[in-house]
Length: 184
Image (cartoon, rainbow, N blue to C red; front, side, top):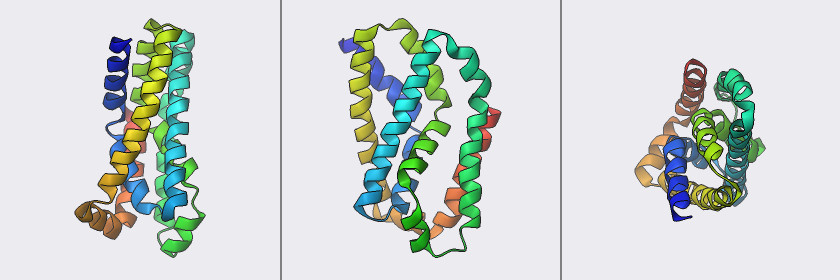
């Protein structure tokens, strides 16, 4: 079981390191405890769906997942375009209207192409006891990732830069991520 736990940690870190930047951006956009909580719940929802897709892939749905994964790039592109065109609105109105749960879940899923590939290969070798250990490790790692993302977002220098240039950075990151997903 220790080997399963260690493998799970490595699989999580390897497939989610890029999501730290996305979490930082989301946390700098969050207004208050409610939206911070929504980011955490969205992250858990997204990770759950990626793990579910990996499990399904492990049991024979690789063809379906492989064929439609590039289309997941449309999600961050749409979010980026939405951000570009909402840039003229008042920040407080945009932020309080936004459901950070949905945004975070969609961004987690959209950037999860590598997650599904790694999880499918890993889960195909594991039985229920190993999958149970992985579920616990992933739950803990998701909490750790949210904490790290939030801490990074509130580092004074990063927070200042992300806050000042958010209207340029967020659409650029979302659209670039979407294009990368579709090309890769």
